[in-house]
Image (cartoon, rainbow, N blue to C red; front, side, top):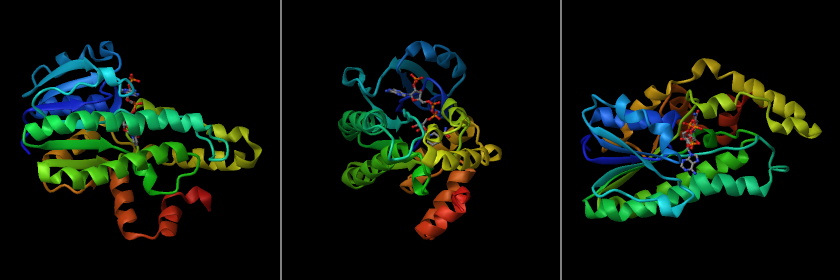
Length: 270
Ligand SMILES: NC(=O)c1ccc[n+]([C@@H]2O[C@H](COP(=O)([O-])OP(=O)(O)OC[C@H]3O[C@@H](n4cnc5c(N)ncnc54)[C@H](OP(=O)(O)O)[C@@H]3O)[C@@H](O)[C@H]2O)c1
């Protein structure tokens, strides 16, 4: 597709979403940068000032259906808003934490997709881009609830791709590895699982493994450029990385056994 027309990005207040909103405006799209608190994006139109396209900020909370409105002429929807929680083993993760993550990472994205599809269909097509996580490709312990929510969004996108292809709507999934944002910085901590005796040693190994990716962190602007490429490339596959580690993981996932993948990417389990 050509970089023109309206693109809506969720969770554009900070992190990857903010970088995607700026990147798409600079590439030529008329971007609606949506966020829970529009004050957080007050500087965005200025930052996109000399862009080929344009940028405006609107309020959208993916858990509040009353705030989900798709602009006329929508050609691109980027479902970027996401959240995570405590790093706990399946045995101890409260089911409420699953509900909270699924509400944002799955149900919220389904809501925006349901609102976007009729608008795109009337306009002759478009691209729906869902930001999941490469973490669900390998057996990362203590991240089950978050990984489950991202895998669920991946499955929704996979079915949707087959449902709307005939309408000229293309679905792409972006599976980030470590990208320099608040979420990634917040993950550099002892997992909460450490408070359970049976999981304390595992928690330490998982934290050590997390420290091991410090030299492989990708700037959000670089990740955003990769997201744009997947949106513009009519031949892009369903699943795409947006950084070197995600590319490596995706390649290994396509060619390895589950066991080999776990040993290669979760060495702290040995
Ligand atoms: N950074 C990474 O290494 C990494 C790796 C894998 C996947 N991801 C995924 O990439 C996406 C962006 O992550 P990030 O690293 O940029 O995270 P981040 O820095 O924590 O930013 C998350 C964004 O989501 C927004 N958000 C949360 N709940 C929302 C809601 N109910 N409605 C609308 N927006 C909401 C936040 O808004 P507020 O400012 O209002 O809180 C913020 O804009 C997420 O889906 C994340 O799971 C990131």
